[in-house]
Image 1 (cartoon, rainbow, N blue to C red):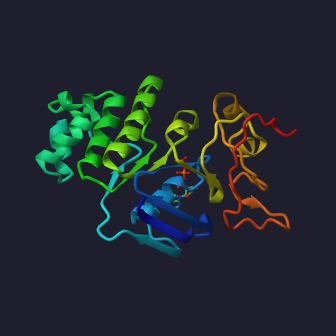
Image 2 (cartoon, rainbow, N blue to C red):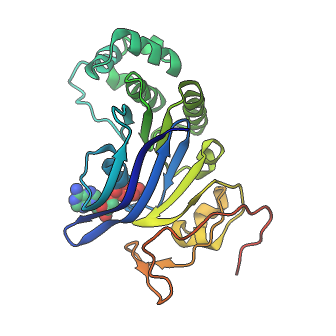
Length: 266
Ligand SMILES: Nc1ncnc2c1ncn2[C@@H]1O[C@H](COP(=O)(O)OP(=O)(O)OP(=O)(O)O)[C@@H](O)[C@H]1O
């Protein structure tokens, strides 16, 4: 596995607000890394920093020389009065016709080439956005909530497709997702973010864990497979760590560990 992109001790502030705190993150080829975290945790901000779209307040970024990144944004807004076919939309990305056709074959939406972008379903739109990202022949695919607006069957299919693509193309994948239960099977590394990296590691299929409840609330535990970690601190409503003297949590000090049949703590 080749290292593609690495962030070290990245901090990001907007005015008084600390959005990212001392983040270390390393992305490698043929590896899927999934960022999870509650709303406002800084996931999109971290993606923007990794993409070079947002300058960090401090910290370092290293990227493979001539790294090609294919980015699939969270959503796409196209004026309904603008006539734009899928083919034209893909051409606007600057890729060659060959690369576009190759990407269309990978995502299985060749037949939509002449369709108007505005008439696509949620699932079709996401596949076209993925096609555009793939047409760049990326070393790294960055997907910000790739299954938004897609029904559950379509979500499973899309995650499977992303997994297949990373195997076939050997590209690294950085993905933001709220869909833990669907993402887990196809993820190598999970990073649990809430301004800082609360924990990170390989996903494990486990039962509800109090640490997870701290971040995502009890409802999520009913439907999501989670992974276990020694999440030894709490967050206030703004995501800030409620500091106790032993745990001034500025570093990802926490590691995931496999839990087979562990009972949640009271
Ligand atoms: N350009 C900006 N200026 C000021 N504050 C910003 C800016 N961009 C993001 N923020 C703030 O940074 C925090 C993190 O936002 P971000 O969009 O990165 O979170 P997120 O984890 O992606 O959230 P969500 O899951 O809701 O998409 C939020 O409080 C947001 O309001």
